[in-house]
Image (spheres, rainbow, N blue to C red):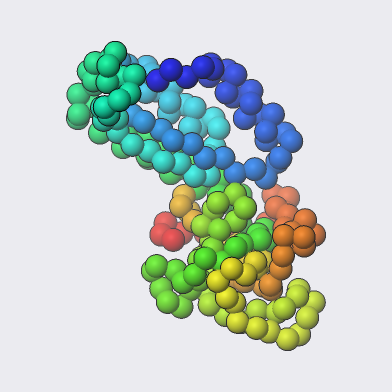
Length: 206
């Protein structure tokens, strides 16, 4: 796919990013069954997904597109059934690793930008962390500040502090604590050490 770097260079970059930004969220696109992809290539993709530990991913089976280098120069030689099987294996591995990575956030407090009601329930709100992770939490009034007594409704566009209580491969669930802001993020949003995290069971549905 005309990538101008090696696996080793990519992994070195990932390690450097994680060293500089320990709580970074990583995402990527994966295409299964590109022209000439061998079974060994596919296994290398699975091992990369396991090694990196992505929070978010977009996975597809390859299909030829006009006006691309592959359309003019390469042959779409991976059978459809092989593409689909490899895609399903990638999705399975990705979801397992994403659930593991997201579970590490249980017990932490995340700054969430409120986007609106959850698509699954009008009683819940949905928002995103700065790592683009979806967070679902009950639609409840919250404190204006962490130490304040007065409460207000949460509105779309608000920043709120949310305590994460459970996680799966696609989203986090928690409870809103108070309104906040980008400026206050560093004070309140920290991932707790492993021995200080609450014990919760990760759900399989957001």
